[in-house]
Length: 639
Ligand code: C2E
Ligand code: CA
Ligand code: CA
Image 1: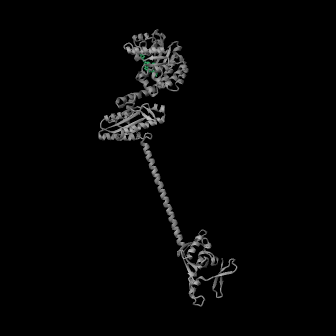
Image 2 (image 1 turned 90 degrees about the horizontal axis):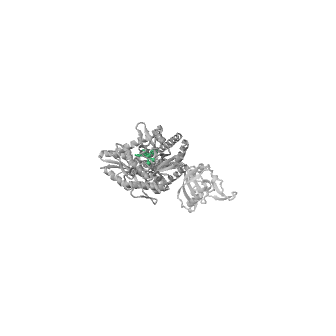
Image 3 (image 1 turned 180 degrees about the horizontal axis):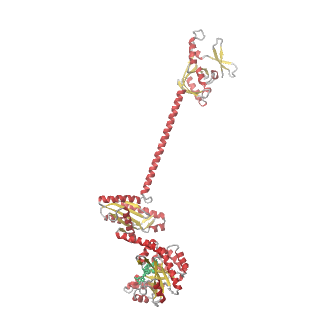
């Protein structure tokens, strides 16, 4: 609704609300100030005091507004106009909220205005208005109701102070405060993040440190921890004049456990052993795992050496009862080696090496035992190592030679074959017999290339003899277990036959009982294939191993060689006689050829002839001979 100003003749003016269609003048809006500042001093004409007050109102730097009780603006002083940019004519008669209040706050404003009218609202209010330019202004309002003489409320007068600058300053500082808060928050979360990272790093560091000193599988100490503690123990023993013992323990046949039951099962066994070892050692020392199936115990403070052997016995006790893993019972044993400080070494590496040598010696003695280090063990090992090294060189430098020992028919005394026996012609030590190096070659695996060399050279020699019309009969060649278990063994044999022109029918391999029994199924398979090739097989050293007739039945072999140890005693001991007689009888029943080894006397020969043992070998006829000697003998073919 519009409000228009209409001037009186005396130049005063009156306000009228226009009718709804804004075409004619409606209700007069009484001069609000007039009603408050009623003064008749000048007989109804404007008086100086009212004029003075009106001047103040219009020239003040306060927003002074007057509303009628409907909320329509009926007065809008000059300062209000300057502040908002609206002329009085633009806003008079309109609701304040429509012009100055943000859409979202209009309802709220109306509510507050009603409260002002009913005297319920606080006199002082803070509010935000929007100027014509769109700029926001903040005002601190003081509202009161103007009533006529009878007390009837006529209008609401509001005086507002522009507090925009203060508000903005406040806003800015609160913004700054918020920003500070935000920064504080950021710093706090950065600090938290940093702390978290530090904690994680610490954990990582601890885990790394743990993995550097502990075995992940068994949670026992590892070699690094053992080394550190061993160093401490040496210093401690020196200071306190006491002993320190380093015990190394190696499980016997652990490889078999892994091979037969799988690595997971092997791991479980290691864990179980580790657990028992830890509880056995308790607070007396350190239990560690230092390799695959190698454990160590360090006893750092011993008054007597005896205490170490007592502890070792306790450790062996762990293995008296079977381990039960996944419902499976498993008997395990261990070999234990001990070195003591002082005595067995001055420093860490030496003590470690010597305990290792002692453990090796315990294993050599069949395992499940304890060995304390002794100097002679070191000498033996050194010798072994030098032999191993020498064997490698011998292979490279062709230092091996072959000797042949005749196999003789007992009735005709004719040579029906030769056994190939290798020798090592050492450039410094001279001729070295096989007992001195074959076991080491077997242990190190060097027997594989050596055995191959022997077979090739023997076949080659045999063909040379044959070409010279010298007939050695059967060529017997010893085959080691290491060669026999190699998957490519047969391939190698076939290649050598082809290469040398050797005929399979002239060849007899000598394998020991232990080879055959090690893996019966595999042995039978290989033996069948050899048989198919036409190569015969003799069971060597019969009587020294299991000598199980049951197994003998299953093996596709053609010959049995009775070990020298039985032959030695046949003429002295009735019991041995009976054994040999029984073996010969059974072998004959099984259709096997029999060779008696190590026949040295005529008496032995007579005995064997009587027992119908058809072939013998021994010094009685000939020692093993080099090629020339053997050839000489073969040419005569009779001894
Ligand atoms: P072996 O296969 O039982 O060989 C027979 C051993 O008995 C030979 O010892 C031979 O010289 C010896 N011998 C034969 N008759 C008599 C006798 O009347 N009295 C005495 N005291 N000894 C006799 P050698 O040559 O020292 O060989 C020892 C062992 O070395 C062999 O026992 C065999 O197991 C192994 N060997 C020899 N050459 C080879 C080879 O080329 N390969 C493999 N794997 N082992 C071999
Ligand atoms: Ca032999
Ligand atoms: Ca033999």
